[in-house]
Image 1 (cartoon, rainbow, N blue to C red):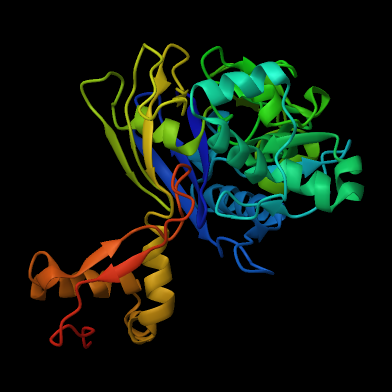
Image 2 (image 1 turned 30 degrees about the vertical axis):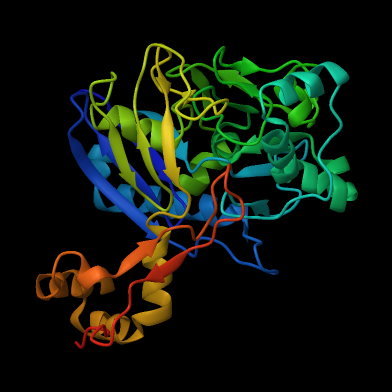
Length: 380
């Protein structure tokens, strides 16, 4: 019997473990949902990294218990995760503090100081203010400025995928195509930036804190005995480099050139293309590294995306949540059933989806506009 691939997909609100055969057919699946983050202050969004690791262990053990014959033929594991969610790890690979989610909106008081050459270059292209905002948004900078004791303990500053890959292999390695975020990464060359480069000065995190990078499908390491005991995976199973969740999705739906686009309706909604050429949809905002090493993924985002559905459900659909639990279905299922009774366009009711502002419009706020006296909630 041919071997299979176990794909771990860790999103903002759930983690899925899926086994595929060599032709891409899904053979088995398990998933676990969790709260996307907790907030101690307005705009803060943090999570215990072990929420994701425990979810990974739960899904793999469930797959093993329900689909043992398939599970035993898994030959390789790959991990893809939400983007721009970095974790401070100590020398043992343990989190120094809870991670700061991509949805977090905190900023530091002042951006990092750039060289005169880089200052002039940024001003010349009209990107000085945007660069300052990027530097202030870097969560590593925030930890360094406001929690210096934790930054001093930080041996590696890694994406969430880097944390999960380390838990599986005990190696500080991650995939090139997973490096998306406020980090000193050269998206065009797919390497870490030099400290004196423009991006290296925007994100002054220390090159010694950056994780070792492995190109897509390269081996990051092998499942350790400890990881095997926690996940049920075979000791020595190779863990290969994948890419970010959006990048994997773009490849998975068959978008491998500029004639098609991938529309992703996740917690962060995106429209992504796949291109052999490096080009910027928005000036000076780089395309992300494609999972295919010969491709780039230019992208446009709606920052909160389908997260807004969870927000709406939690704030306004308590009745549907209770009814869904009684019927053994999801609240979304009940809400979807009512769509046939709503006219297209909702009689002029419009959602302005800035529940999280974009890079070039940090002052933007979300709104629901166009209310009239006949607008009301559905009754179930």
